[in-house]
Length: 410
Image (tube, rainbow, N blue to C red):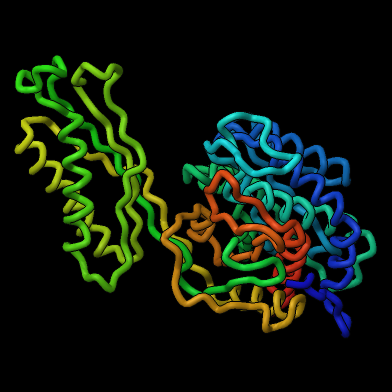
């Protein structure tokens, strides 16, 4: 694939902003690499927050940070805003995953067990350099007045960060919210857009199994919680798909099993943690009921106590049609209409960008990031890496879409 041709034949409302993004492109790549090398887990993004806040302050902006949670909110005015003018928000999430990086890059994570394997380093750089470009252009802005707000959000991976920022005024005085998510299914220079449901409703499953421990050589004297936990996983994996219409997308997956401390000891308890992903709330209710019934049945059969808990419910992202079209139009202006894929199916992935959409309409788009010459490892893979050309592309699309939403009649 050749580098996308970003040249424009006619003036564009965002031309000055796009030109500034190009001038900042090398700095943006350097910043993203710094962030990639210095990942922080959900709720502990204090260094990332300081890095962002310092860059914004050096540009003459006034970011708002907090004592109790990481994250920052920063407003930028293009022109003189009328009283009570609403702003368009652009969100970048900041947290990393608990994954040991295996990508062969000089800026690989220097923090063992932590990695930006979901592209949040890229997302942070999109919001940061959109803000820096706007700040540079603001003194000479000759277009209609536009209010922008940049949200640097912690704790996306655990589904808490959007709620934290909303409680601190993130959506107050905001008309629309926009975001991007890198997507290795597309190369840099291509994007995916979708109206309506984009991501799934997510529930975390926590299941505690209590039995009676004993000697591994005499299992008949115990009530083995580990055996019961394994039986429960197999039961749910076979039972759940038979309880709802096969044409409805849903999945139950367990990713954690904690039990025991020695190979020759049957433990007293075991804990399972997993996730349920659904789009249809009726299907969700059916599966949650099925999990509860299976826990009771396996518990009775195995003579153990099994208690399920459903925690951290996260709503799916429901893209607003007007915001989706603003993103699609901006991408078409920048890249050409042939570079846009209209997605037909939502993802079973979760995204707490949905937290902002409880208060304002908004949309998220998929930003192609697959490397030009190299394997395109998926998100959450220890070798995940991006084609850094996507950074300027995503920044320009977000800015152009925000201008459209801010200046079009409501």
